[in-house]
Amino acid sequence: MHSATPHTPSRPLKNFLEIPYDQLEELNLEAKGRQLAREDSGALREHYLKYLAETKEIKAVTVCFSDIEGRFHMLDYDKKFLLKSWDNLTFDGSSIRGFSVVSESDLRLAVDWGSFRWLPSDVFGPGKVIVFGLILDRDGVPYSSDMRGRLKSLSDEMAAKGMVANVAVECEGFLFNGQDAEQVYDGKKGFELVHTGGYFHCLPNDPLKLFIDALAEAQRALGFENEKDHPEVAPSQFELNYQYTEALVAADQLQLYKLTARQVAANMDCTASFLPKPIAGINGSGMHTNLSISQGGKNLMYDAKGEDGLSSFAWDFVDRLLNSANDICLVLNPSVNAYRRLDPNYEAPNQIKSSAVDRTSMVRIPLGNEKSSRLEVRTVAPDANPYLAFYTILRTGLEGPMTEKITSESRRTRTRFLPGNVYDAMRHFKGSELVTWLLGEAPKEKYLERKERAADRCPRELGAMVKEQEILFHHEVTNQYLWSKF
Image 1 (cartoon, rainbow, N blue to C red):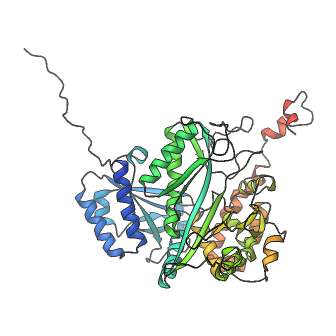
Image 2: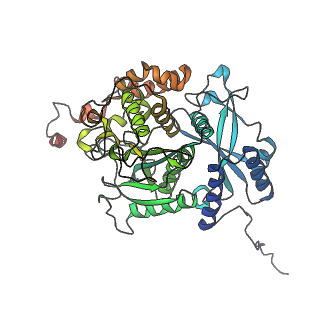
């Protein structure tokens, strides 16, 4: 009598979609091209629904959105459910900080089919694709606190005039040893760096370089159109640059950039941190935002005979930003930590002026030609909501008030500074008629409430707690080696 032997399947039980990186890049560049060409939304919807129905290896569609602060949220819908219910997706808005209250909690989630992208399976898991959502209220009207929707509306307005706003960001971050390094942060030990080199310096198999390479590969597969990547000035700091694109697509890519960076780091038992100033005494992280506006294929920022090669249109844009710099500072630097970065000792762009050479200026004018001429808004922190930041910069630059006449000389030499702390920034934001016009009264109040709550935790609501610093540095603690740090 023969003993029973376990059956070994001839193929894996799971057969979920896994696409090689080179094919991913082709698919995502094609999808991105359709989005940038503004193909009819109905045609795109039918195209992708047909693809989902025919591709059995896809198990789920990740629909994502961002709250008013820029926090990224994702819902995985079973593909078969989505095919039946794509036009009736809802969620509880009262569970999302800064959205609706309990009494009016239900919100709708509309799929923006143009944003459909295929995902690297080794980062996001096999069998998934991703698409960005637009938030609607119960009646199907665009939700006023959905900043992605606000930016999309602005992009549509500009497209109706034959205009396109192009944006590219230089988003810096740090790589620290250990997962969830921010959540388990110990003030006595600080963060553990993975790399002690500096600008452009890293051995090929250093952990920081391996992280950068893996992140670059993933974003290339996502259709980012990479340009360059390198270690930044501070130890364990990184920056990956990719090609400019239309503002809404650029904001979506930035959210994917940060999400992918965090997951790639986690796969290495590390943490990718986008805190503006995680470590005192070294450079912080910024998100220099480069932008240009074209119309009919012509770069409106360029004038070969203009000052610094910029057109009068571009200089008007700069002047409107400088006039309203204090009002919009809280949007661009939304946290207590962001104002640690605005320290003039570390190349901080905290001066309300423009310059072609001075990197402490809020707005820099990079060297450019007819194709590359642009503005660089250096004040933006990497923890800003990209949809809100791009929307605010564009609306302010195009339509903001000209309350003060700014001359060529005063643009470069005036010595006005941005707010030095989050409370001053909130005061300017709260009293700003421009911000009320930009956002509306309700979203403005919601955003300010979130910022006040975050700021009050550091340190107002912490005031009653005994903090390690007050013990470590107490005047009666003898033989305290930490005093030598001051």
